Image 1 (cartoon, rainbow, N blue to C red):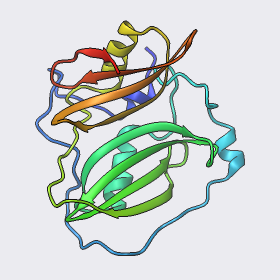
Image 2 (cartoon, rainbow, N blue to C red):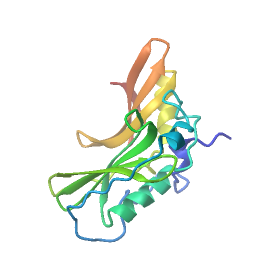
Image 3 (cartoon, helix red, strand yellow):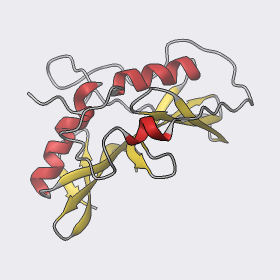
Length: 193
């Protein structure tokens, strides 16, 4: 069985659902310090290239590990958005994970090969973060629904709340370019964006 990056970090309770959102377990005050780590271009370049299909590609760092790095970097945060995409500027596949403590929103970019935080951006948001939960519908299950609607290879994905609904967004490469497909987490229905 091919274990894809999309599913590698997502576990479920067996019935396709979970009652726990992606949140950190402990609280700590936010700081104004920005952490940046360098990633070796050679190390990043030795992994999958920008045209990898995320349904069939695996990385050393799965989603669970990326979420653990997020929890270690921002204890007590509420994860509000998760993305996986190829960053040309870093020459690497990265998880972009938004997490919020109070009104401080932080976007961590975590290298999918090394687990290093390669960027930590900060912003101010409202004090009502809504947690996403990749275990309710795993990225791999959502990708299967998206590629059933639009056959092709998955170039990137994100999970966030949009208009009060938790949904995945996929960029799918087809013979005619790239198409955007959304998958509603509650209904499992895929729609063209």
